[in-house]
Image (cartoon, rainbow, N blue to C red; front, side, top):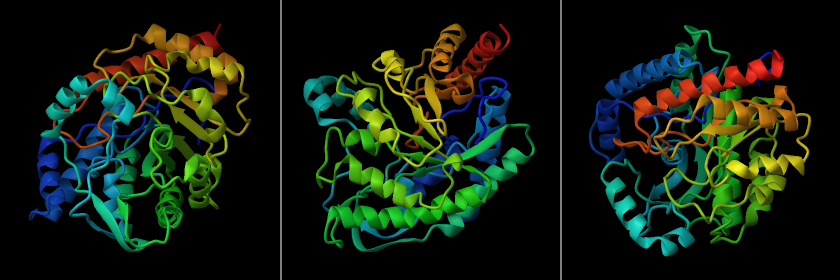
Length: 380
């Protein structure tokens, strides 16, 4: 994993809006309807090439495939893991913490109602057999698409997001929630290794860690969650891994978010060389202060979010530069990479939270802010 040795490097969290023709085919696939697999593969390959090119044009140094082939940042594992079936009586995962729903019912009723028709969501799942990894061919196609797109461009590095071990639907097979989670961890290990062996940086997507702050139905606790994540990462060099957590993919009040101060001791235990977290979100903009209290281990890099995934305001490059300089002076300029708070289409949708054209403007602002910060940190 590259560090910001001569200037502040830029990246983001991974997901980007998919083209509407690809979304139409994805809707058919997720809904169990007939679809042209060859055409889907072709459109996904072209979409990856396009989003990688645009990232490079906007000045993003460390790019991703935009998760163009995936219907969601964790729902995609239905195609990667055996042992799961559609749950006829289950309910879809609730993305909004209960406290938020209770305190702001009118807002979320309108918000969620307006989003329902635009999202592509897998049905709820139930585990009825041993969890195994079955997604080798699909994963290899994703890897090839990204590597092919990157080969023609002068980017610094490429990363591929992958879901952290988490409980996927109801458990009707394992003796306990802990056994279920361990099985998922061991299965996902195969995906993690394949990504790293392909020469890509592995990004672990893990909003579930902050969700445990609100709801822990199996009473597993965050410490066990991290222990099993580390089990899934066993044998993988930490410098090949970046870890991302956040507080949700929607716009909302967010007054029930877990404070970074409480989260940080857990983050520092993870076998990852970089930590990506929300920092542009106004509920967390002040949290750079925690680095006045905590020391960042020498083997870790910070990827604080400098642009938000939740609103269409384009952050000013000068503000981005100010924040980057602040982080750099606290932990060292070589150990700061400018990132985003979360993905810009973590769930495949026809109407992303942030308009696709606005995303590119945000990336340009991120690149310009990093340039301004680099001038101040290296050349003054």
